[in-house]
Picture (spheres, rainbow, N blue to C red):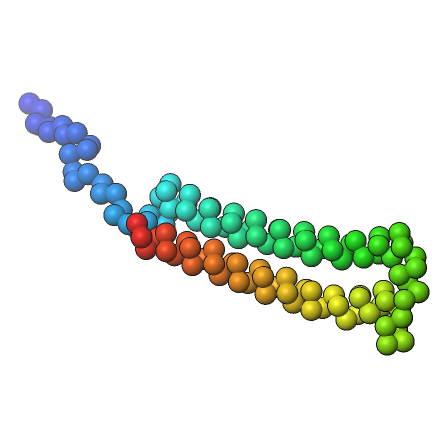
Length: 120
């Protein structure tokens, strides 16, 4: 005589409970959590690429301006040629301003993300 076998449905156990908050979604790396993190990373990347493009664009245009307007190379500022003043003195504060702009906006993006996560 064969033994008696009980067959049960695999879903008979307690159903999986979805995370209640966005923070839990992110911690458990669910599909929604991945979407939130991907959104944050893309926003940061977009900001970084934009600041880099503007900074490099301005720096790359300086030699073109000096080539198109050769009279500007003859201008003297405190006994130094204008191109050297721009490249040696003005560029650094401009790069610092770009870095300040990036940090300020990156923190804003992160703050908005945290507000979004805490709100839900």
